Image (cartoon, rainbow, N blue to C red; front, side, top):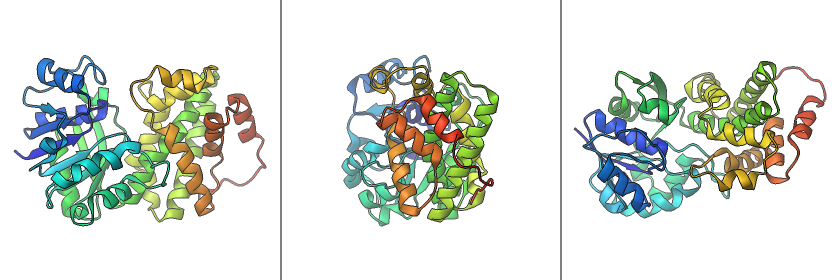
Length: 335
């Protein structure tokens, strides 16, 4: 049994904390919301973010971040990407120097264009990042909670660190593969949310399988193109953290990003959609960061550009689609 801390009690953080506890580890879940902690401790449920899921009796929860991470062998960062710097900055002084830090947040910081590994390096320092890993892949929290067979990937530049984290999470229903391409896994997890917004728009407009197939394929081409320009490995984008997560997030009804896009396609205003959401749709903030990264690296990403225009400039979904379809004809190019 290992002592572990999960920092962030949204649906994904909660279900991973429960999974680790079920695997026999001593797990503390941190939340800044007192009502969430009270529900986990008193009712064995997180009604706000993961309702109707019974949590293990051994799982503990606290609002004291120092208490949560102090003495933990593994610290899992699962806050929304735009809050990782502030939350983990508060935790930093309490994290063991030899702790394994794992990121399970999918996004790019909007103001700085930093990936989560870059945010955590700046926040925690090099010593605590020596065993850093990132956990990603196609995995809806509610389906993991139902013990649906799920496969994900854990990436690290250190094979022994990835293998150790693999062992923490692996069980009969949750299969974990290792990968050495931290950059590619980070980008795949973040960029697919932007394409999922576009896929939701297409579904909201009433279009069918032809349109979805085109969006997924060309969306994967955009993700791969940017990833290669930044130094990632092509094969990563053909795997769980790339194509796998993209397919899930673009087609699954549990996808928050797809849902936001669907409602945009149905004619709702973004502000009205967000007013009714407790959970975070990471693609909304990530989209502008992806557009800026593409411009920085000289990479063409027309789908992402039109998604940003719908979000920021209130461009009509039909106009955005027309802009994509009427682009100059050209060869199919992935590089």
